[in-house]
Length: 109
Image (cartoon, rainbow, N blue to C red; front, side, top):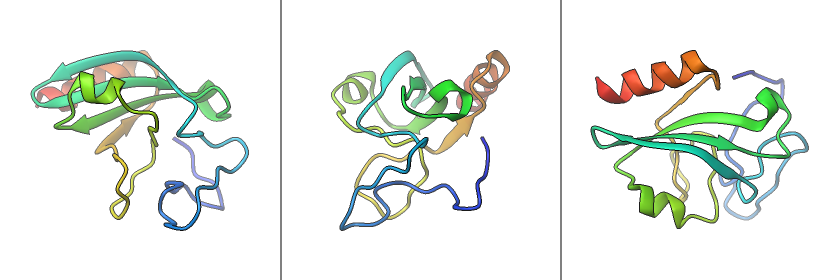
């Protein structure tokens, strides 16, 4: 996870517009690479093809989300957002094998 001068925010934080900055994840253009349910959490590997950092790969953790509900989604924003109606992850991890292990450990604890 990097930080830019512009910051990192959900494209849904602004209610009137959905704007994707070049190089940021497009929440409408993604595919799932892994889905594991652990203790009421869903640990998800996601790739956003047009995203620049980490080749678009993300590891996200969601609370009280079923695999079926995830698969039905057409929009999946990897950013944290407290005031949007879209689903927001409760945690993100670096998209590596270590990050995947840490995400599973987090969900198991």
